[in-house]
Length: 445
Image (tube, rainbow, N blue to C red; front, side, top):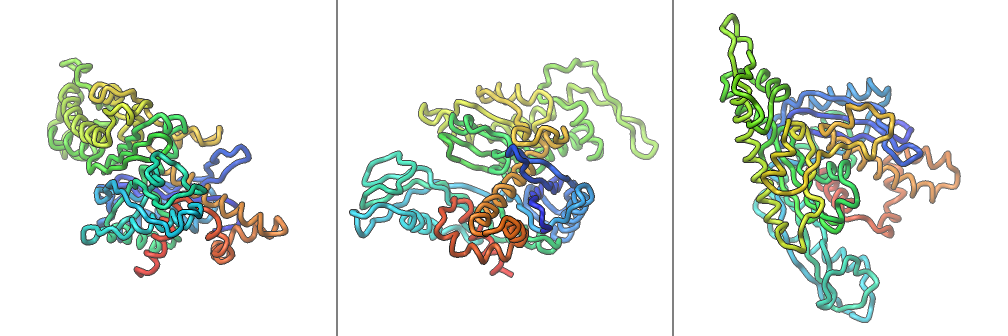
């Protein structure tokens, strides 16, 4: 990466690939320097199924972002999703040798590492272990046990599992596109960083990110992620239904959905008709908007009901687990007309559309603040926060500010300089997981 403190987020989606370059301005907001977008050609339902085409699409998006910003892209933060991601709950405990000593970081690491040893299905790997709350000697609901005394340390964990091959394929595409893999983030987590406020995460909220191939769900309560799920349906399935239901080509179906589509059939009158040109001299087709809405409505209801089942599985109907802030819809699919009203009708929960504009600088392009780019902005935020952590540590160690700047630009030097320091610093669970995953990908070569 060039010296100049900018970061890059890369969203590899089913319908589009977005590369977004940005940096933090003096007010702590994200300033977008350039954005590139290409049609995603090798990804199906969030999973890479054609490496060559995916590499091509990534390179196109990256080149466009470089042209727009005049900067060179080196290292990127990438999102991972897909129907292979699943989550489960697990409780585990350790018995400490000396209960007279206070609980420290090592005890928590030991407990987390124990969870990583869980036996998974063949070809699956634990990619994420998130502690929910701890118990010390039977005393429950402890958020931070460090510094406490106790012999038995227990915790409930939210474990995210994914397919090893899918994760390796993403890593391979990035490397083959001539980029460096800086970090991997679970996509629902990236989207939630971009569109949810701290208050919503405390009160309890379900983020539904409706993409082209998948619908991602992330549930927060008391500021902690409680549940994640990936549903293998998205906007693409709605387009497919319109294509088959109206016997038209995909391009026309997509246009119909965007221009005239509505999730609520009641609002269209019977005599509202749209005419579609026929293929190669054939008669044009006439489609009533009421029928179009009925096709869309049927599929959207199915998607929303599946998401609502996941929300109920988490336990939303229990008083203690109630999601007070309701639902936040984001992603390209959230722009469907009347979707908000339909979701409120099915779930009975307050709903709003999530725009990733809260963390963007005021002069950002209005297009970037669209729900379409929620995941990309979230990944950029992740890249920026990782970069600033590195810079902070550098500035503490380097005597001269110029030295700090130069070092911040060289990731390898910085990595070596901090090997010892990072052990002492308390890393978040996510950072530990990212490092683990990076080692895993490097060894897989």
